[in-house]
Image (cartoon, rainbow, N blue to C red; front, side):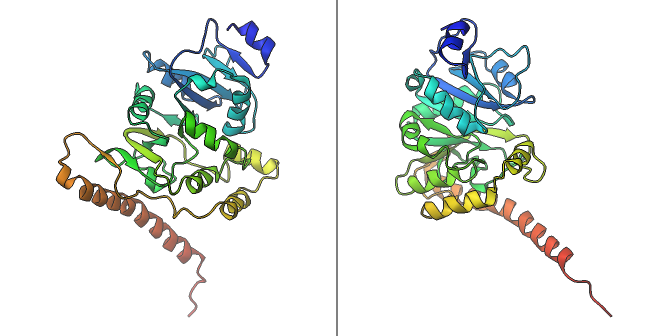
Amino acid sequence: MSNSTASAESARLLFGPGFKPGRPFLAFFRAGPQSLHPRLLAEDPQRNWDACVSWWSAPPPAAQVDMQCFTGDNKYEGFMEFMQDADFLSRYRYVMLIDDDVYFRPGDISRMFEICDRHALYLSQPALNRSTNINHVVTARNPLCEVRRVSFVEVMTPCFSQRALAELAHTFDLTRSTCGIDLAWSSLLRDRDLIRVVDAVAVDHTKPVDPSGGVFYRKLRSMGVDVHAEVADIMRRYPDFGGPRTLHGGHVYRQGLPRAIAAPATRIADSMIKLRYSVPDRLRGWRNRLRRAPAATG
């Protein structure tokens, strides 16, 4: 498929010179001017994945990628438009939707896809390094596991099997902010043992979520979107799944870990990870309450 052919078929999806979809996996990036995807492509020269970049800003003049698209107000809207144009999408065994501030170590996107394929994972995500910006403790890397059974993966970097994509794509436009879509996934899959965090691949979330000053959140406010109201609506519409947590059993443990201690050691490590994040959060909460308290009078 040539660029000219793609342009004739759809102004929303363009192909790089000489590119033909053929690798078994697809990485779909939502990208702005500081996107990490050029680095990820350069650091994975033997990649097993095709790349599509969904731009939320004007692409740089020298942008060279397999595929580009230009629609949608968020990553999931962009991907839904891509799904309409990409009649070859069913060729990919796994599809991962990646924010532009997520950094994988060299070759780790390919490794993530290999692990998903080897273990026939349904819905998954890479773990987050514990030194990076973490939104949900359940996604923090547990070093004792290769693949960990969980109740939740977040919207930042989910990896869908073809079956999961077919089942869950209808949720992609539930909110304009994308917040809460992942809660719907967890509710829909809550009794089916189908969600995993891949601890063998850990990524850096290089920018903290900034609801007050972030570009995307400013855009949402200009559109009149209330993120909290969207999440509350999702929680009303989809039954509770028990919250984001590591579940008991069903893990693939790190090679060399003695089977007799694998399960209890994993539970201990999980508890320590929760403690690592819950204590600072509580201290911040107490500090904020003290700041808001009325000053003592003599």
